[in-house]
Image (cartoon, rainbow, N blue to C red; front, side, top):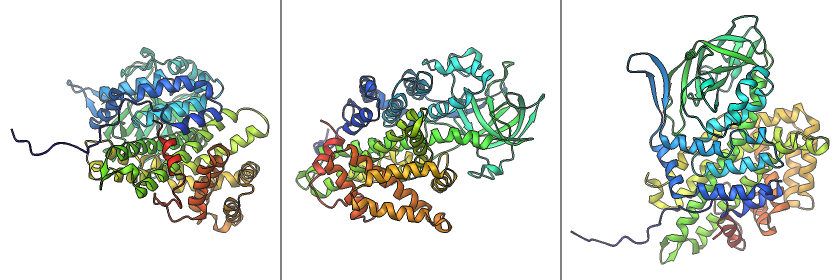
Length: 550
């Protein structure tokens, strides 16, 4: 046996740590956004998610992607998606903690903030299993307005016992929902959809239709049902399309193939055709796009949370590596330039989390009355698409920077960094690309100027007595008051809006040095979006210690 060297200066895997207890910014945000009563539950959740065996499930689910079986051994059509057991275990964890439905069905104070925090913690372990959970969660408010469907589904959604079996819904203990919107020819331009729906009897809300057409992206095709956009006599409407029909036979939804995706590999995305598939009309006839946009608004918030979660996982992996790896005679964490990079990444991660939970708190607050509820609705409608644009866009560059701290070890598949980098772009694309989000910000402001006025008044209060914020706020309002130029400047408008809101949140709630560093680096001395450009080293220790509590 030859011994050529000793293995040294290699970083041990990051495992067996409490995701919640190590995150100061999350604990503070939970308390200030009205969900402090849920801290003990989230502490236990963070402990469970951080165990080595749970982290290994995330790795396994992505190394063994779903497989499509179109027929059984006897040649019968089955359209079955087989997924790895790790996927089912991760999804069962989400259901056991009520992430799929509890905030709607058992609405306690701070329920949506607590649910957002749970979503954020799980997203640090595995992102693909969140997809059917977020679609199920977003569909509940729509389906509660459909009495016949809700009578069928309410008990399935209330259950916290995940049932992975491919059976008619009547034989299952729980249910999951997916979405089917985009088609080959249209993509984000849903008005170009060609799938048709033919009434089987009288038609109208709650009636049965036969769907013929296709969907180019059918999210999580193994779900028990999907909300689908199709064209009936009243133009585009929304339809509930079950996987199995009421006669116990498979519905006419034919899975053509599964997408071979860059990331999000644990989660199946399919191409399907509808062969007179049964669909039940949901919402008002001809109002399918507004109905599904309401659902999309909630999924967009989950995209922000999911991207913030990826950033957080990448950051803690980078911090862990820098504390255990030495170069040129010193640990990486003690080297000034690396500390600049890590502190800057920690600052962006905290700002993303603060914004995400702030938007989740708006869901809790918007159903009340008075000006605060109106302000919450304005935040939801205007800030959510802006946040989805900015935070999801930043996640790709952020995870790449964290990978770079690992050097060559970060680029090989033995560790978690390649999976995080592959995962990072999906939230920026899914349910509306960056341009769609920025245009939606402009539409929301134009359609409800009173809501926009409330939001900007609150923003002005947050910027008060700080010239470094008042100047960009004035520039932003000037841009918005130049309607002929607003579409050209839409990305600039969304970016500045998000950065100003993040700055005011940190100014109100974070240590003064943290807020001041954010303002100085994002407004006073901006030099692009490359990490490691903080103007001074004074707050680096505070930022790094807040990001990773020993």
